[in-house]
Image 1 (cartoon, rainbow, N blue to C red):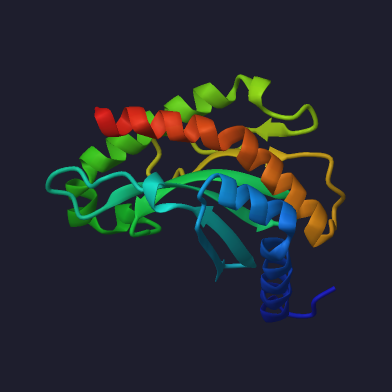
Image 2: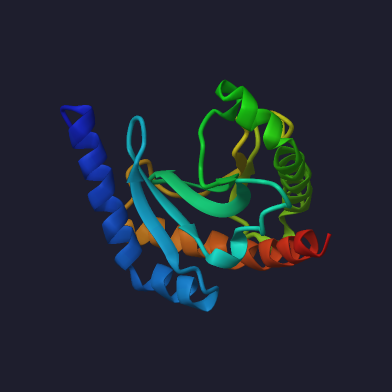
Amino acid sequence: MPETLTQQKADDEQFFEHVKAQPSLQETLQRHALNRLVIRPSQHNAVLGITKEAWTLPRLEGQSRSLNVHFEARNRHEFRLELGLDPYIGNVEEKPELFRELQPVLAQKTRLMERLRTLLQDKAALPAHVEIVMTGLLAPDKTRAHTIVRFTGNLPTDPSPEQSARFFAEVIDAIAPMIETTLAGEIDV
């Protein structure tokens, strides 16, 4: 067990580096052209982010930010689908001028998050052992809402990098086509 928060972040970063290197995840990332992988520090741990340029929507006219759909692993046994401002800003409400400016983008974020949550409620595309968790998530119209859904499965509490990589790959394979279709419709709007 790590003794300090710094050690926890370092352990998580090393774990996610091993996850990234797993052939099962690499093949899936190549298949879906997910080529933007980043491991970054968070408040309490390291986070693995997975996306691609095509999942960043074009900026609306007059806007300084756009939206990006991405997968995130904040721990070893859960995977998330997230939607956030790009470039990222955590609490835009604390910047009143920017908050007013971004109202069109924030309205687009609400619509897109609602659409994706609705589509994901039909679990038909997911493997049987993958569960969608929406409890405890902020409503789509809340500015701080970033998580669309969380995915959990039959992973142990402390999975190996290979187990996590296989789980993340299964979720990506099941969900990426739906994201592509949804975002294509959003760009046409």
